Amino acid sequence: MDFKKNLMILLVIVLLSSSVQSVKKIIFYEINTPGTYTKDGGLSEFARKIRAEGYEIASISKGGLSRESLSTYDLLIIRPSAQLKIEELSAILWFVATKGGGVLILGGEPSDSNQLMIPFGMTMDDGVLVDATDTIPEMDSKNFVIDRFTESETTRIIRKGISKLGFYNGHGMFISGNAECIVSGDSDTYSDTQSFQTGSYPCVAAATLFSKGLVFGLSDSDMLIDSNIKLHDNMVFAQNIIDWLSITVPDVRGNFSYEECQVMIGQLKLEKLRMENDRGGLESQIENLEREKTVLSSNLYDVSSQLAEILRGKIGPFTRNQWAIVLAGFFILGAALVVARRGGGIHAEKKREDDILGELGYEFEEEDKPGGEDSDEIDTDELDKELADI
Image 1 (cartoon, helix red, strand yellow):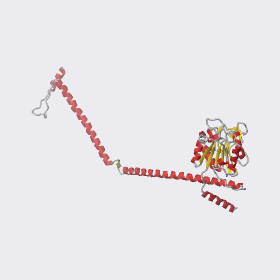
Image 2 (cartoon, one colour):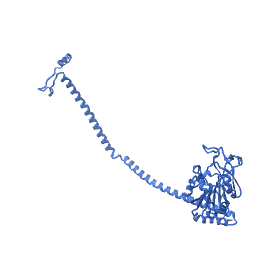
Image 3 (cartoon, helix red, strand yellow):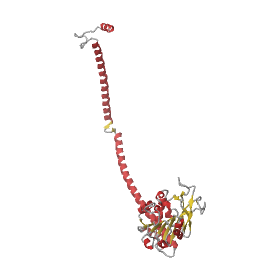
Image 4 (tube, helix red, strand yellow):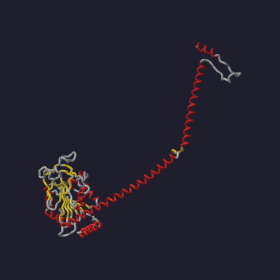
């Protein structure tokens, strides 16, 4: 038992140390597909995201699918909008079971979607799901938030980083065979046709390992259109689905549990790649923080130097004593200006008195020193009398 366990650990280490995977090629099936669900139309944000993650993207809008047209691709994204031809169904089954490709089925009208979903253990119900307690604001009860997920060791990467999903006028799904329900409504979610009653937890997304390939079915294609995919965790969910579908299952005959093990190993490899990408982003953030730290340290040094100068008595370009001299100079200058203004006022007043007396006919000679020979005394009594007569 310990030998098998150690052998498995060794196998995981060897696989994780190798390259994660080559670039995967994705083809969008767009024959008879409305523009709302094409990669250059309503699914453009979804397509842009997976292209940014390193996937190559193409589409087919004329003719039909065949083994030849699928042979150069790794993943197929399809929203059946009409009845598929028998040759197309056969090519898709070959693509999954023999080539080991991954298929994402976006549910549209149940009658169109079920022809492809049923072979993989998924059947869409005709009724639209309703949830009155988790309704998305400003929308009706057929548009609600889902937060109930299940996972197994072979599908846990699909659940990673997700807490809530927006669900828009989608259907419930019946699950059979090897298919596993990944996302479901809660206890009060029901179908407007009563196919799913409250407490039935209707499934809305399922996954299956089908021979050598992987298939994921989503009953609501509107979750991925441009107006909804950036809401809640829908974008993360879509990216997780594509990453899970890109896992390669080796050609091993007869032991299904071993194939499941390969899927788990593939998930570990994807998680390793994500951690390496996260580490690169964190290292870039650390470099930016180091640069900011250097700038802050330089600023702190300048402030510390200025503070030291202040503490030594220097304020700006002068010391305290120099500032005192400057202020004293301003004070003396101000006092001189005040005195000058007052002196000017006294001389002006005296000049005004002399002008009045001059108008009355009196003239005065410039006074000499008091008591000198040339001094003339004015008879003040006589002057007062004359002023009174006037």
